[in-house]
Image (cartoon, rainbow, N blue to C red; front, side, top):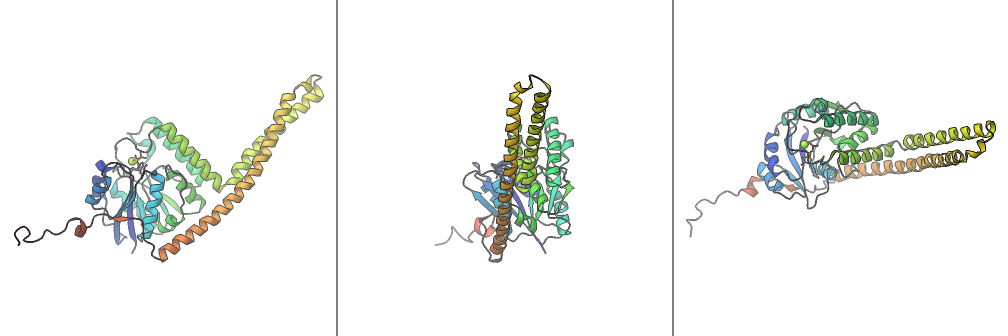
Amino acid sequence: MPKLIIQIPCLNEAEALAATVAALPRVVSGCDVVEVLIIDDGSQDDTVDVARRAGVDHIVRFPQNQGLAKAFSAGIDAALKLGADIIVNTDADNQYEARDIPALVKPILDGRADMVIGDRGPESIAHFSPLKRALQFYGSWIVRGLSGTDVPDAASGFRALSRRAALRLNVISDFTYTLETLVQAGKKQLAVTHVPVRTRETRPSRLVRSIPAYLRRSFLTLVRIYSLYEPIRVFWTLGTVMVLAGVAIGLRFLYYYFTDPLGAGKVQSLILAAALSIIGVQTILMGLVADLIALSRSLTEDTLLRVRKMELRLGELPDTEPGYHPEIDEPEPQRGSGTGA
Ligand SMILES: Nc1nc2c(ncn2[C@@H]2O[C@H](COP(=O)(O)OP(=O)(O)O)[C@@H](O)[C@H]2O)c(=O)[nH]1
Ligand SMILES: [Mg+2]
């Protein structure tokens, strides 16, 4: 029977974490063990103490803040080494309804999916501002296009991963993992599906401190990850557009050159046409280089996958510390102590 590990990335979550952990199901049908792992990303408050008292099983601790994406990856790595067959990621702020976890893991238990995204229905969440709703909607639309999946809610942090998927994902962003893992899953032909989940309103987002910054970073991540998997498409499209524009402007120059007595004066057009054509051809060539880099990345990824599997076979220990252990944390009071001697 499979083992489920629920992981929670945390940054200064001392206030909300106890309630979040308390709400997690410790029995999930179809799984014989359910454990909780938190990743403390250099919190300044007593997140770790709260987690231990709340009874989490494992803690990964960064002495210094490394960002959500790194914390997510470290959690996945530790969970695999702890023997997880299924990993659920949720937020520390009790935003996602923990009672929906069985529904989230069901498609994986049924062998129908490698990655299940909890769909919050973001375009109709009442406590999101109209701007946030619109961004979620168009952002998900773009990610659907790039990844070739049909997820309605790409930015959702409530998701389940099979071990197969967990072994294969490599997060490169240091900001958030949500969008890029979807593009990767799509490009790696992992089976991605989604189930509706309930959410509640919580404190202001810790991740999205400003919407322009969030958009800029997400956009950059998507461009990077997409051109990594589809370099020819990206660079050749760009290059071809430039070459075609150059040719069109060049033809226009020639037309005036031969028909208009003053046409030879349009030398600026000629310069622009030449520049666009040259840059366009260079861009197409860059596509070839990018393709070679992508090829070598796919070999590296294959090696990584094999190394991870080897580590698991060799019983490599996770970088975790134990969470709550009654025998360590609360020693039995000594009977008769204080009266002896
Ligand atoms: N490890 C880590 N976790 C973070 C960081 N920023 C946010 N989180 C956690 O990521 C989860 C999502 O953050 P949240 O502020 O709820 O973002 P939102 O739900 O997308 O608005 C929460 O569990 C946070 O504690 C970070 O820099 N590092
Ligand atoms: Mg949240």
